[in-house]
Image (cartoon, rainbow, N blue to C red):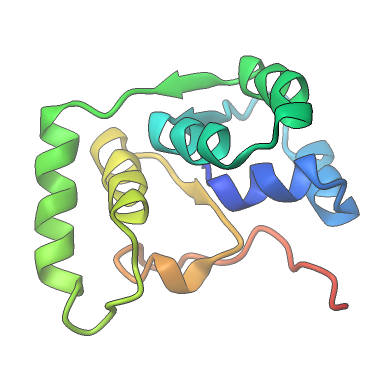
Length: 128
């Protein structure tokens, strides 16, 4: 299963629902992170967040984006961009990574992934 950037951010921010979700995942379930999420996380972190972010990322196998995944992401973008202009290239790359490797996606931003059938939010963020 590929873990989306939003879940990692929620965990780093101390959101209880994120911690509970990680705790609920079966130990037999392999959790991986796209290299895109690594770029998104490290590109947005503050200097004081470097160590904890790197520790968190060190837990996961990182799935690279190669040419077949990039081409699939481009194809997905061509198919979905007209009706869903708010989807980032990173989201297309993460969706393509999941499809290419036949893995599920764990996310809380379901609206960013209309190209993944039957996708449900891993958890809901608390309001407020």
